[in-house]
Each structure stands twice: as structure tokens, then as C-alpha cells.
Image (tube, rainbow, N blue to C red; front, side, top):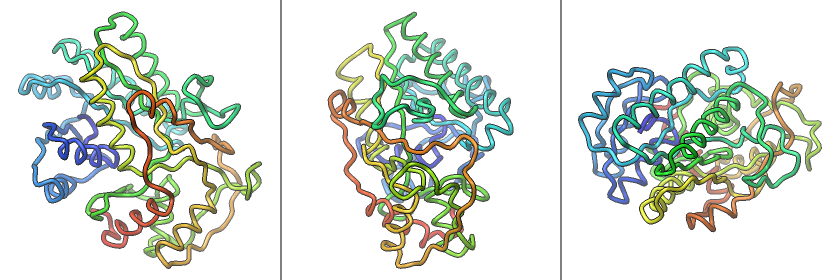
Length: 332
């Protein structure tokens, strides 16, 4: 479970524990906090096994795999800031691609042949049409996106070489929200790169105003449109993928996990203002490099294949985000 203490990882751990899976978290805590483990225990009454290990560390990872009988790996560990990836491409390829290759080598060695991989809608690059189906043309517009695309290709090649593997490539759209308890949520270090944590920080007075990058896109209000998905919906998607593999062996699944609805930056700001009863002052800046006008999913394949669909709407996402940040203004 590399990256299991992170934002999406921790919510998925909760859903797995609720479904009586035994979970082992491997996380170097570079973008997460040890308090997450206590919060998971508070919510589920189960203490997950935890190793503070970097998945670039062959020796440490080997020890973890030797100590347990592991049936499946869920791989969440990655650097994920688009802008940073443009400035530090080598760091991204090393941390995201090279470490995944090491993980896959060790999985092969220990005969673990089921992996659920956190991919991303960035693999669609600047989509020609929306909503985006899984068979859309793949490309990337930044090193972060390329790192996800490269890992997808590596996993496909492994499957074509040996189809006794079960591989799920889950292409996330934009995860937001938090667990309904308000005990765990997104906890970015420094100035957030993503919209919802940025709005959160403005709402609690950490940032003076929201920076909106570009209001001249060809969208209904000029601001960028994205498919925001509640992190708990996303977590349930992982459990469904695992359940699918228990019934259908030796498969390669590529699935969009999104709601199929696109919301603009200003739509999200308005919904958040209603949920939090706070004004979110915002200022428009020029577009950022690598940003695209609109991107939302056609999630129908996930519904057909793994019987999954998103249940939470934008109002729920904003409500749960506000619930988390108002209880934890300084994160963990």
C-alpha cells in the first residue's frame, strides 16, 4: 500500500478496513502525516500496520514483503504537483517511474500479481472532445502526466508479457472533499496547487485571496472546467476494482473515475461559499502553462465493469471540505 497515508490513500484504507480487508501501509510521510494513522484508527477502530518506508528503498521494501503474505498492492505513492514537475522533471521520473519499476520487480519476485494503480486524467493531455472515454488519444502536457502515462505503459507491457496479472489503471479526475467525520482530509504542504485546498486556505484566513488562472477559456464563464470527484467515491472505486479481481481473474482494466459532470472554477467557488457561509475573494491571473480549458470524464465503463458510480455531488464535496478544514485549519 505505497502512499497509504496520503490524501487518497488514507480514505481508501478506511473503505478497505470497513470491508474487512487487512491493510499494510507503506509511506515515507513526505506529503502526509503520522497522525493520519491515529485518525484512521479512530474512524475504523482498527490500527493499520504501518512501515515508514520509501518505495525507492529496495532493502526496506523487501523486508516488508517478506514479513507478510500480500495478495494485492494499491499504489498511490507519487509526487503530484504539475508545476513542480515542469521545474524538476528528473525528480518526478525518479520518484514516480523508477520507484514503480522497483515495486513491480519486487512484486514479481514475491509472486504478487494484482495491482491497482493511481493513474490520472492528465494522461489525456489536452482532450480533443469531452466527455473523455478511456479509448481517447493519450498524451501528456507535463512531466507529471508523462510519468503516469509511462507507468501505464509499463503495466500494460507486463500484462501483455504475462496475462496472469490483474492490473487496474484507475484514471482519477479531480479528487476533492474529505471523510464525513472531518478527521481526515487533504493536507498539502505549503501553498496548495489544487483548487479546493486553495479555497479552504482562503476560507480559514491562511491565504488572502484565491488566484484564478485564466478567465478567457472557451467555457461557460471563461474559467477552467474540471470533473471534481469526492475522495470517498474514489476510495470506493478502489475497493470495487479489488472485488472485481476476486471474481474475474487475469484482467487489465482501464477505467475513468469521475462524475461525468464538469464544473468551472467559479462554480466551485460559489458552491463553497454556500457550504461555508464564507466569502472567497478571488483575483484573476493569466493562464498557467500546461493548463487546459475543460476536462471531464465519461465514467460509464466503470459502472459496467466494476459496478461503480459517483454518489456525491458538488454540494457534498464543498460541505465535507469545509467540515474538514474548519476542524483542522492547520491540517494535522
